[in-house]
Amino acid sequence: MFGTQKSQRRRIAHKRLVRFGAVVLSLLAASVAAADGLDEELERLSAEVASHSERVFALEQKVLHPANTRLAVFLTLQSRDALDLDSVELFVNGQPVASHLYSDRERTSLERGGIQQLFTGNLENGEHELKTVITARSADDDFVRRESIHRFRKRPGVLRLQMSLEARAPDYEPRVSFLEWE
Image (cartoon, rainbow, N blue to C red; front, side, top):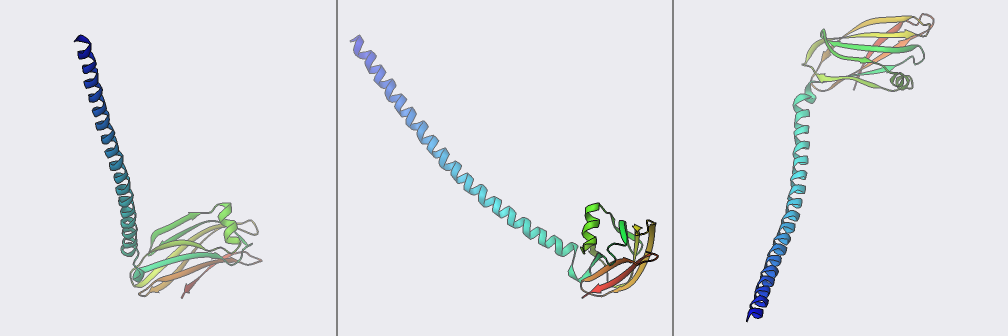
């Protein structure tokens, strides 16, 4: 009688353990399925956020830089060996809008025919003044600082100005010229 009760208790405990294990396994399976569902949901939300981010960036560009009022200023060197460019400052209607100090690598790029975008911004239509201040070392080792003023009329649409620097022998005086790109 005593022996049968012990074995019966063991069987009951064993059955409870098996049921508990089955419940734990089913809970684990459910949590794995839920985790897979969460992974899919996270991927979907990440893609949605990236899509919204692209749309917000496009709208931001439209609002901040509308094509109707855009002004872009580019820099090129016409006399590539005559000037060792140090810095360029740009002012629109007396307000500073760009300033750049050149590294050796940037100077080399410009000397090889590169074009640098100095400024992109918005400008209302009408008469305006663009002032540049250039510091450079000329081919005859003189340190020069030149200011140049360009008056222009901004019309509706994008206006692209090319600012060209040149210095010719024998005086190597820097000259700045402006050209409107079509």
